[in-house]
Image (cartoon, helix red, strand yellow):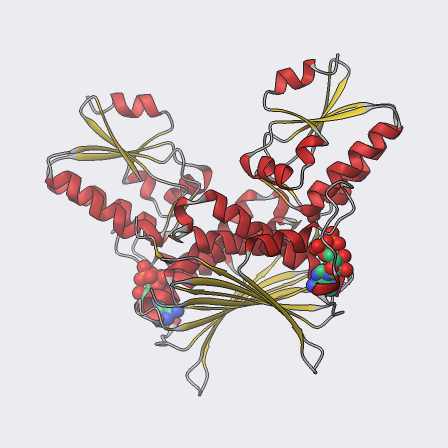
Length: 146
Length: 146
Length: 109
Length: 109
Ligand SMILES: Nc1ncnc2c1ncn2[C@@H]1O[C@H](COP(=O)(O)OP(=O)(O)O)[C@@H](O)[C@H]1O
Ligand SMILES: Nc1ncnc2c1ncn2[C@@H]1O[C@H](COP(=O)(O)OP(=O)(O)O)[C@@H](O)[C@H]1O
């Protein structure tokens, strides 16, 4: 398989959450091994959604005029989601694990992401751009011709 | 409603057709008056799909290494789809109407598009970039909070 | 796409979308079925929400293959979007179309 | 979201997604129901394919509101994705969950 990429730029408007989640799920669904693995699709849809919602809610604090750029990049052996925003930055290492004995206190999103991906990198560039890169290694990614 | 835009860049790979169609439908579905008008959603999904497929099949002749950039732009009174490609160009005015008495001869896609939109503009820039702009005027576009 | 045999009729059920992505596959499948002697084909569109120009083209090409082989192809359960497009392109006069699946099956005999 | 009354129980059916987009609406709806004296609430997730952390948070907040008002909230028919997430977050120990809708309704009496 050749590499497959999509770059999407939207404003930080919640109207884009579901369309983007579906876009990603639908791209993956046409590729092996995702096409036959609903559970894998579910978990990737979930972390994509959590990362995007965090940008709208935390980086942009629900201000709908922010810009979000998302890159989906597929290689035969890995999947990468890259999120870029120009809002508030944060230090992921400072975020504590959620306390599962106190449900409802939040903090689940980043924890879901960390549990699912193989690599997570967050950097703030001097220009003020924040980049979150999520990498999941999956072998044998290819187009499903059936 | 503030204007809503999305810009999407993908390679000319058929794996993106369905995800993009769904993305567009899903964005529109969250806005009035589309949310309560399945027929309007159907016709916009159709022409978006026809324009995209034409680029993959005709501008890039099914070569999957081409680049396609799509802009969806919503204002309170109109919807615009803009498609940019760097493949073969053509002259839409030279394309005859389909002969409905000889079904299966093709030529339906552009005809569907023309029947649906209020404006269609196709230009080839000196750089070789082709731009297809489809504009549909629809009054009262706004977020559907229900 | 799902293929089933019932009372000597081959029922080909199309999926959510009958679009450019699957148009060639549909044509090839029907051609192969006809070559293997399956000459009564019912396209069951009950699960199909959406058709595009490529899907319409594939249905016309499939009908041609069957007629050439002295077979027949009919269509069952088009969705509103499919029905609208058939009417716009006048394909509702070209295809024999049934809203009821059982009536469609019986119509072959 | 769809709300129905059956045998003194308020059944709130969630849609395809119980996500950040509708989380606030769910919390507000349950709060309003509780304030109006509807204290037995069944969240029917039979149509819900997907839940996220915001959806989980909204369910926990809703349960809290009901318990504070001496009511109760239960959950029926979680999808595999929903069930998986409940287990991962240990919410399956917090909520009373039923695979069968009728059993869930009867459990209130
Ligand atoms: N993209 C982001 N930009 C800024 N802050 C973030 C971002 N993502 C997460 N955070 C911070 O990390 C915290 C934990 O995030 P998360 O685990 O998703 O839980 P929640 O969103 O429920 O608080 C957030 O409350 C926020 O302070
Ligand atoms: N984006 C495009 N780039 C180049 N040529 C195009 C493009 N769109 C349409 N065409 C030309 O116009 C013709 C008619 O297109 P259309 O009405 O969609 O029918 P069909 O795709 O079935 O031929 C095509 O056959 C092609 O020659």
